[in-house]
Image (cartoon, rainbow, N blue to C red; front, side, top):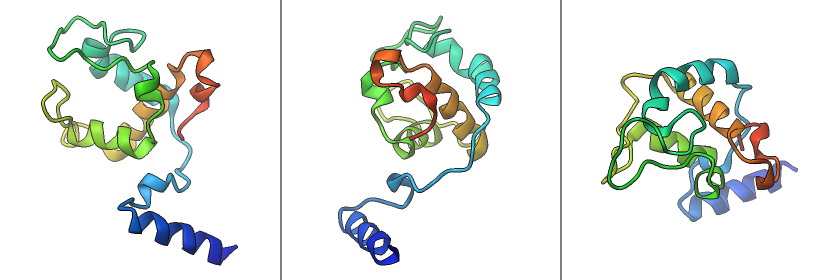
Length: 126
């Protein structure tokens, strides 16, 4: 089993993936804390339900956090978007305002915004 895990890690590194991109088990996250942070910070742009319909309007439009385009991304990709921001969008870097744990908590909450038709992805981080 250990050899299989090492092999998977080596293949991933050869393809340019990091360990975080492999979604190596993350500690349990605090969805309630994530919801509080979301309601304080993220709601302005992403809206109450995460559909990108908040009070602030931007071009290009803010991401719909309930969409498959967002919900289908690996946790590490979403973390990077929040931590480092997204170039050529209004999504700024939050690494100075939020701790890594707070970002992970927000992402745990964002996963709960997934519509049921998305295959139950609202159950937690992936």
